[in-house]
Image: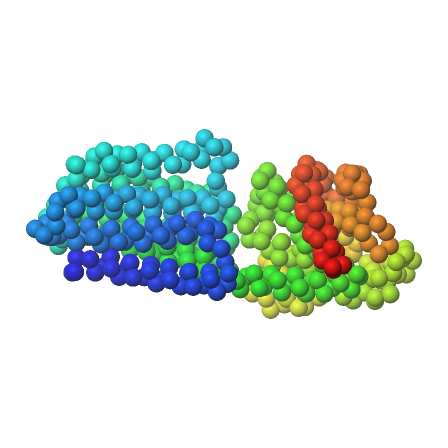
Length: 442
């Protein structure tokens, strides 16, 4: 047992994490296999089991049959290869770096597949060496395992730094730490093969991913926060006889625009993962200022007169003030700023004829320019208390005609180019609304 204490300890930790993970998934009714973490956790447990098994068999050659010793080593090296490869794929997944080309995606598997083939073909060349502290295995299969591990760890580090802005700020330090530990442990294992500490790197990386990225309780807390914001926004929307569909649809449109801009490398310095996440959380709050508008104006079925319209326009300024005062002590400063800018400036126009400040062009914050297109499109494409919904062709034409006048021409152009995606969202919500109406009648 003295040779496998480390592996048993690491295995116990991962089994505990697996137990808690399953328990939390059931508690919060989260589906498994939403990310690669499930497979990563399972492969980590399998790898640690065979790591401990080989540490025992290689140190007990008198009681363990050579064939069994070889089988355990093959299974250990294969499972370790799989864990390292899964760690790399997980890094690709969370950074959104997966290649679009099938050929490039297939190329990611090449070193792994090649190494597994070499392992199976050269398993007979494994050497068992008697060390001063413990026995250990070497030979061609071990060398190729080291090479493959080094290749995928280097690729993972490359992906991390190249996709730095696509990772939430609070997760960057943690991920960097796990990668650093994995590099250090792997390097020591390669230089000093007798120490048998590969289990430490695997365990720390998987535990770190769970605590900072995959903990169901933390995901549930984030979901509840988003739902609280959405519910508060719904209360405001309901004051003008809207069922809350407006904020949900506009949030989806905002997400489509922001992701497409980032995919085309526009505003890449601004559209980080944090920025888009905060923008999506802030979008439902864009009309929060309507809470200050009297019901007789907000719910008026006809056209507003000049005095009423002046009061209605104040909702943008008031919304910004509410965000600034309410979120004053919020820890996330970037979210507070984006929420303020979306609420205050989403009625500004590219040509400077908007309100409340008459900002022109790029002086209007990017988040507000994105919000403006989404807000206007939804406003004209849905039924209001004073008019019916306009045909979609006319709605898209309004965006096209407003390009360079009401809207940032780049953002308006992107929106028109992703018309098929926008129509999918519109159709989805229309079907949902129809189902709700049928249910209400029944």
